[in-house]
Image (cartoon, rainbow, N blue to C red):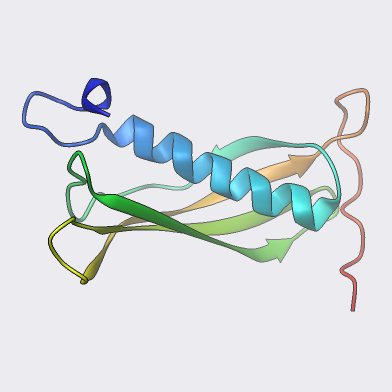
Length: 113
């Protein structure tokens, strides 16, 4: 939306990062079967702007798990309204911790086969 842009008409990087965190959180919740919290994000570099009206697609993949944590790579891609070409905008690795009902770290369950 226009309220999410800078004066040049580009989407704020913070808005995009929040969408990536949501995508990573969904992947973390599915993998751990419950509540998770973001604890770290590795460096992000923005390779191309996102304009108002662009379609943004996010792709999340669990790349590693520990006892209570997991790392998820998220890529953000954009496609303008006037093209079928997609361009990778940024990527980052998010670290999440699985939480129990009291907000304390809990073990990540084994992956189902």
